[in-house]
Length: 100
Ligand SMILES: [Zn+2]
Image 1 (spheres, protein in one colour):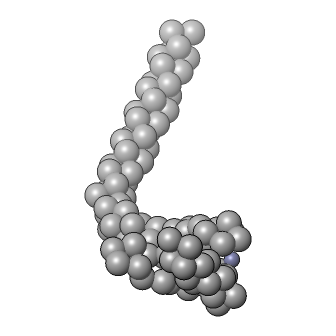
Image 2 (cartoon, helix red, strand yellow):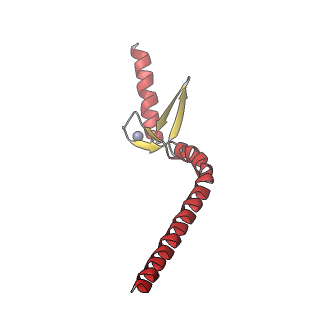
Image 3 (tube, rainbow, N blue to C red):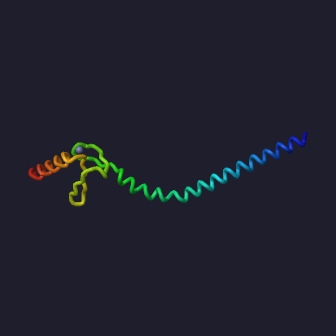
């Protein structure tokens, strides 16, 4: 009987040790992948700039900065979804200037 108990205890420790070894191996591989992680993270801001949404002040639609029509006004940049909106914006600017 004590032989079986000793055997079971032995098997139990083998299972525990193999489990701990596997867990440590996973931790080490996670740390390894964690070390290489900053590279995709440094790419993320560039990606975010490309996917940044800007608001068309004319129709209020949100457009991707990369796809939007840009209009530089001094230090400001205004974005439009279409040439029509840009034209409308410029026309209203002219009107504003005329009124002022
Ligand atoms: Zn628009």
